[in-house]
Length: 310
View 1 (cartoon, one colour):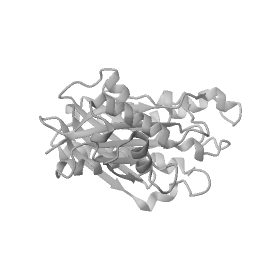
View 2: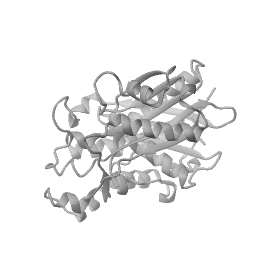
View 3: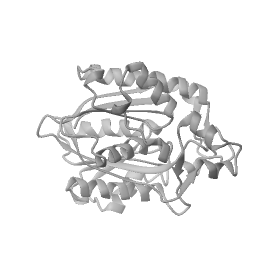
View 4: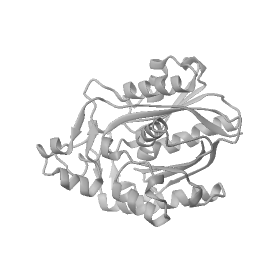
């Protein structure tokens, strides 16, 4: 029994903050940000917009795309590190907002790797025949947890949500392999305290990211008995173009097989990959039978990858 994605959706707040906007309030410039990260702008939610608002909107779009409705859902799994409340979980709030009354619901906390962790966890419930229809959401509003005078962090993040609907595969499509990893010994390099702002040791996180992004791609391919040349599309976590460029050169994936949208949205944490997946689908970048690899890394420090036959 395999798990396949039958619907995708995403939601972004309307407010756009450009690099030039940031340069008015912090010691930075458009050139400084673009050359170091590839980011040109990001979306920032207002005070009234909750993470659950974005998550629920993305979920409803994914459901519409799947042909299912909220009452059909058996389970909701949300990857997030910026929930509305510590409890109830963001998944329970989303359940209420979309009207998925019969669904079980829980959150997964793996920061920017959260969507891969949530997707891997959710797939097990379908593969062991516990549930039939599962919603997986990646959603974060990390701009609410930034020191807007710290140019080492405030230029990086944006807000958003992405979602997928999962069901059992009735053909050869579906998740073929998953791979998860955590290195808690490095956790102090990227921290968001219960009260306070995000702090990051950029040099150490960069080193971790390029190492494990390469490792995750190779490991998940190995588990599926496939090779680099079998990949039709790679969607990496959208954090930094230098990380992505470094890794694809190392593993020798042609740039045209890599989907990048970080220039528009910055690092949307757990929402990064599902937002990119939604855009890739809308752009016609995936066709039936294609091999897709999604890989993310984040605080913890964590890393995860999934290999999917579309």
